[in-house]
Amino acid sequence: MLNENIKAIRKSKGLSQQELAVKVNVVRQTISKWEQGLSVPDSDMLLSISEALETPVSTLLGETVIETEADSLKAISEKLEVINLQLAQRKTTKRKMIHWLLILLCAIIVIVFAILWTIESPYLGWDYSDPETAVLGVAFHSLEWLFVRAAPIVLIGAIIGIFLTRKKE
Image 1: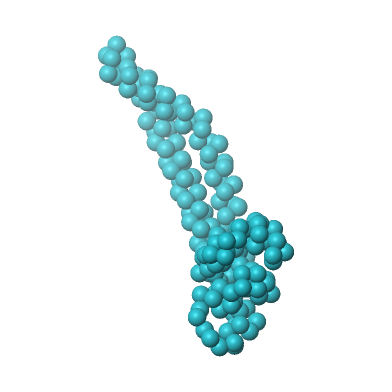
Image 2: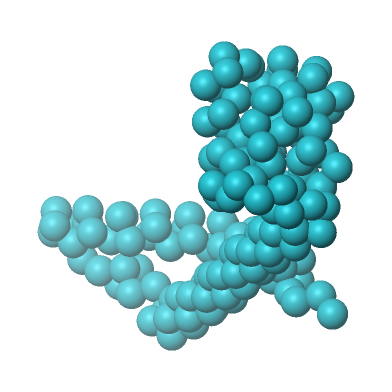
C-alpha cells in the first residue's frame, strides 16, 4: 500500500525517482526499493517524503483521515512496524519455500542415481542392429551420461543452498 502510494503520488506530481531522491536526500535506489516494497522509510523519512510530495502522511499510508493525530510519529511508527512485519513474513516464507525445494531437488537426484545404479545401464545389452532400439539406446545413454556428470554439481549446489537457507535462530 505505502509503496504503491509513493509511486502513484510521485508520478502524479511529475517527479522521477531521481528528483524525489534529491528532494529527500537519499539515492535513487532507495526510492526504487520503497516503491517495490522491498523496504520502507522510517518515520522521519516518511515526513520528508510527505513534504517533498506535498501530501499528508496519512495519504501516503493509504488513509483519508482528517484528524491531525494520524500524522503523529507514534501512529506512523506503528503503521511502519506493521509493514516491516509483513515484509519479514514474506521473506521468511520465500526462504522456507526455497529451502524445501532444494531438499526436494536433492532427494530427486539421489532417487535417480539409485534407479540408474539398480538398472545397471540396460541399453548396453540392446540389439543395436534394430534402428528403433539403437536410437533409443543412444538417447538413453546420452541422458544418463549428462545426468551423471551434471547431477553431482547440482547436488553440491543444492546442499550448499540448504545450509544457506536454513532457519537462523
